[in-house]
Length: 299
Image (cartoon, rainbow, N blue to C red; front, side, top):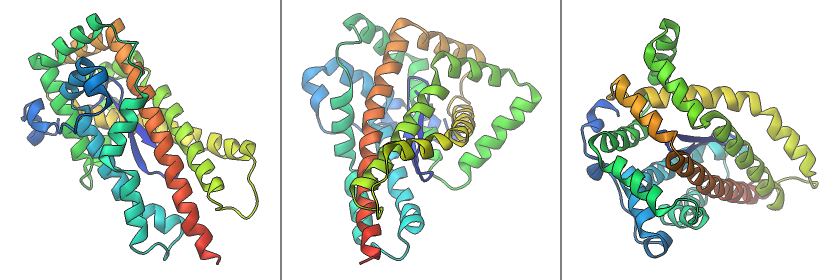
């Protein structure tokens, strides 16, 4: 599952579909060791089998990493939009927006429960219970965690580019994986929607002296599309290069084939639906919160 959601100010808001998520040290952990299981939420009662699948995939740990990414980006947003303002209040606001409990609740509420049949869930659970599935989940988690460290993403990006220039077979496999799961288009679409939500939050919060028409916001967001597309493509290859480094080419092909099945495609789709809602809400709330501090500069 590979999701990355670049935000309006390059906030590393992530994405994750069925295809995404070993740094060598962490990849040796079992998936169970790498996971954080959040307190029981909506799915625990309404769809326990789906909840168990998400746990096996390491999804709740990924949500925790995404929260850490958001917290780390808070100071940059502050410096860009209202430098010298906010004090200790802004970090507290960001921490509330990126509360893991809130993120889990929002995601689970947004995930459609009627799309994966019981047979599909059982098929996917069997994959993630297998040795390959456990290593895929552990690798995806470890790579996401590794990207929190300075320089790791840049090194992975350079490695992916070098392999692409050399015509390495792994790059062809990752290209197929990205295409099968429509990762570039889904991530770009999610990022654009998230950025638009951020602008709406700014406007609703009074960041602008005059009301900004939605058409102008949309034009500004669409102007970012080429950069977002390039950034997303680079991130996907860098992330997957690291996440699947421990897999053989044959195992990578097996994972791709699994993701191409009806069960895999449906899982990918519902994950994106859940994360799109989550990150649009986060972006809107960040924009609205930032607007309060921006407006405060002028008073």
